[in-house]
Image 1 (cartoon, rainbow, N blue to C red):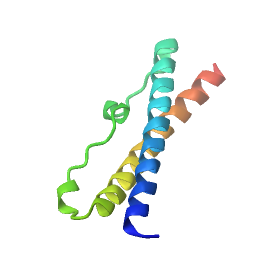
Image 2: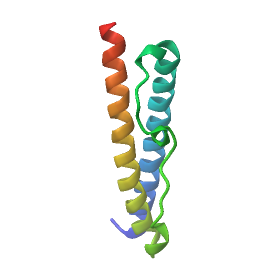
Image 3: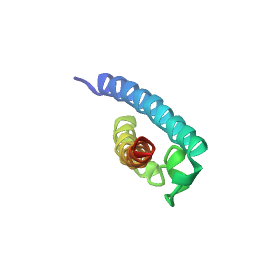
Length: 93
């Protein structure tokens, strides 16, 4: 697979991650509204897509995409953890 094909593949993967992230964020916000008693302290920045402070250090588009996906994936997993905790609390109620 050449670099252009990899860039296209990773661009698609980033779009899918973003779509899933937005869906989970919407679910978290809905649960927060429906069950304010379950609000707990977690970083509110998890509801926003991550920033990429070191993006300029990567020269090629492919390397930039790999960095963004790694960072986004870590961020997504943390938001997923919040979602799972809220979901369990709502289910147990």
